[in-house]
Amino acid sequence: MIGFFSGFLVVVIIVLLILFFTFVPIGLWITAFFSGVKIKISTLIGMRLRRVRPGRIVNPMIKATKAGVDIQIENLEAHYLAGGNVNTLVDALIAAERANIPLQFERAAAIDLAGRNVLEAVQVSVNPKVIETPNISAVAQDGIEVIVKAKVTVRANIERLVGGAGEETIIARVGEGIVTTVGSSKTYKGVLENPDSISKVVLDKGLDSGTAFEILSIDIADVDVARNIGARLQTDQAEADKRIAEAKASERRSMALAREQEMKAEVESMKAKVVEAESQVPLAMAEALRSGNLGVMDYYKLKNVNSDTKMRESISKVSDNEKNDK
Image (cartoon, rainbow, N blue to C red; front, side, top):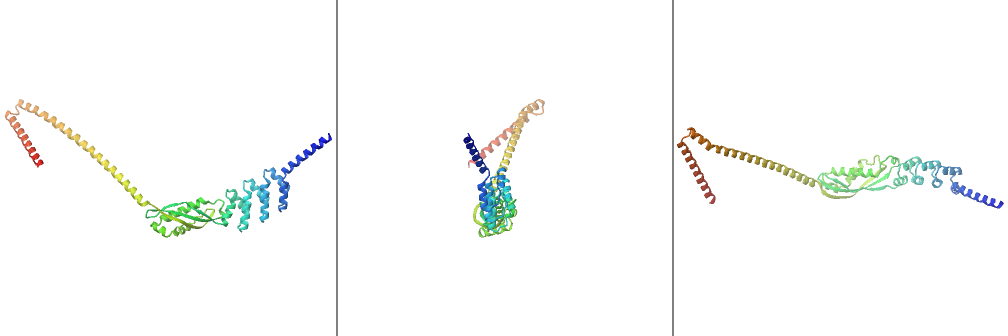
């Protein structure tokens, strides 16, 4: 019975020791101690209770201590709890220390929490970065389209990383400057002969204002001649004018046809009235004969006049036909 309790007690002690060493990072504390980082075991236990992985704090702290960067472990833990990347932050501070860049912990933490890569920012501040713009289309005053491609050399501005615009703004502003400069050129030949004039004009505009970068240089990598936009616009305008003229001519033609139909209708109406009037002539003559207003001899004279008139018309028609045959 005593042996059973002794064995049970040994098992309990072993389990407790495993739980203790699992909960309390003794190995990490020993590593920190021999690395020159003074940290209490109670502090490590507190990290466990605050659901902070001690290794995420202690290892970067050891790195900073060996590099000679003075950082408080409480600040690192606070940055970790705020959602920051402690390891990247420490690497950035070490890189800034080596490059003699004045970078305080608070500013570095603010840059990291703002969503920017603080280590990359320090590296770009030491080693400038080249941003290549896409093909930018611009049109000179003579209507010739020019395709320009530029390379922008920038250096990170640590002071403006928080709240400063990024690479997209730099590219957009450089593109706007190129379009403006080419558009102010009288001919595309001037752009081809002096591409450096684009760089000078764009640099003088201060395009890096309000951005997280400082523009060091703008180099025109390529200039190509594209379409004749002016001629194309004139052709399109001429085609549009032609269509407008054709539409107006068609409108006038339609109005003329409508007027012609109206006149034909009027003529037909007049003919109908003449026919109707002529149909009344025999009735009127008969009434005149009955009433004595027209004599028999007058009637025969009128018939002779009509016959003579018809004969003259037939003779004139025969003469006209002979002339046409000749």
